[in-house]
Length: 174
Image 1 (spheres, rainbow, N blue to C red):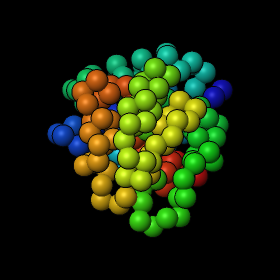
Image 2 (cartoon, rainbow, N blue to C red):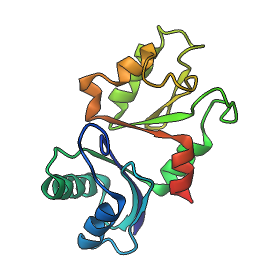
Image 3 (tube, rainbow, N blue to C red):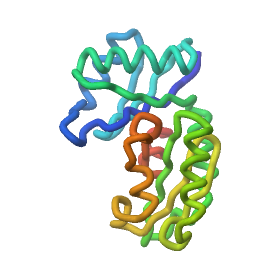
């Protein structure tokens, strides 16, 4: 059985509300014993014998049906998320910056984002590619208004990415 990290895209913003208790109940109802949720931003851990594609499909369908929105979910084995967190390439102790990890649905998305960042000011938008992710370390308070923030916010990336603060990921990892 694999322990999976489940990251819901675009919940608890823009009118889509999925409360942690309701998410936990949904996961339990799908047969995931011991499902846990974290914070109020669509984060969970489940254990399953399903592969990533089947798990994602099941969760997206169940979330769409239960909460009435076009659910997009990214799933990753817990061990992979642990490696991603450990490989954060910037100084996460720098209190003037926010440590973000952008999970990408595929390598093409990751490459598109890092290619777009290559022409931007690295002091404003420090970006590096990682295994299935893009690491980003903007100044505090700038995560919605930098050039890279505007790239990530494009409609083409909404269904293919989800962002998490490194501190949130550490809480998920426990």
